[in-house]
Image (cartoon, rainbow, N blue to C red; front, side, top):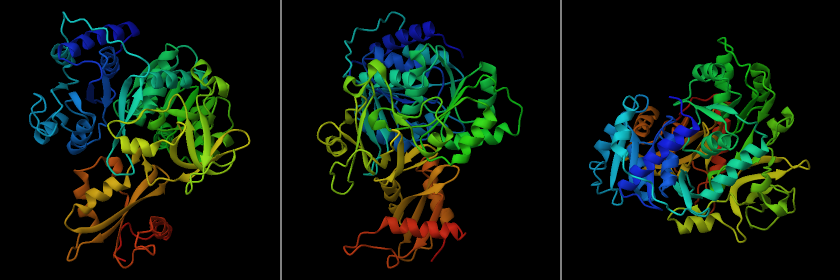
Length: 521
């Protein structure tokens, strides 16, 4: 399916009228369990035309995770793909959440109904949602109104919905195109999901600023992406480092026309320096871009620029994004201000000092939807957001990241909450205690390592634990390593708190020694 700008506008008007006919009004939430099918673009704009708030959910979520996020967001309507890959999403939802389509699911009291999108019969979806006589009502949207709620893992365990405004999205989109000097008509190819800020803002919306096109793939397939570059003359390739590595490997196996490619943007996880060198050589593109941001600040706030050296791209995340008219006048048009603070005391540190990063920007979100306590913990006085990462700005203005002040880690470009997995693991009758830590991984950036204390009398094995997790969590959350230990052997503080830093040191030592993935030591 190919959609023009005129077609997106026309379809979004029809769909917005249909949403209005279903009683969706300004400020209500519409949940989306949708992969990168082209219909997601007019559907997003239809939700905004109706004055509603889009709640895109991770298509890797299992029914329990979908239930939690839909309930937390208070969705009035849920739209889900019938299937994705080998998964029967509609069947899973019908079994786990009976009555959801009719708005009669006790677990989801604010849900008034649901719709299924079947990629083999898209017309049925349009017939179900659109009303030929309906005209979208003027909803009087303002920049400060909420546009989208994006769920991200939090230190308290369960995902939290980040409340992002229309002004946040507009500024982030313009800044993305301005800082990277997008040319008119830029063509971006990616399989990054549009339920994340990277794909939505830098891929779709920034491209629209310059009248560009996106070539979104439903799932990551190296051969399909490399083929699409030649077929559609794409000049901008987006992904995370794990994807870039796989694309490099695939490019050596086949013959592909990559002559149109001029830039690669690979971000969201630590990247070995050899990847950048190999990418420039293999793909023959002029510019290698990396960046830094998070959902709480909408999208990218730090980014390298076209022409930066491999040293800058491999050793830093880039500089504060230049945004022109979308930026801060008192910051010479940059999109944000940054400072570092002492992670223990919270005291401001001199510019250039290593510390915890804090950001103040018109891209800062409202915080967490319906979660005032977590929002209060996110913000410091003066409108600063604690980024949860440690780093320092070099003399040349580029940011060098040194670590995380939060326990969250990123695997395959997705944030993972150790607390969430610990809660799921300890719900198993054979597990007394569980501790999750992030470990470096050459392919995925980081992967989880689980330290397990078995319950008394339990003989639980690694494979049994992974089987237990497989039906409860998305694949990217699955721990790579599982180590068994005892309560007495756990490193603890004087007050009995388990020292995760020491657990990480022990896991690194075991991995370097080539020990088996799980052990009963």
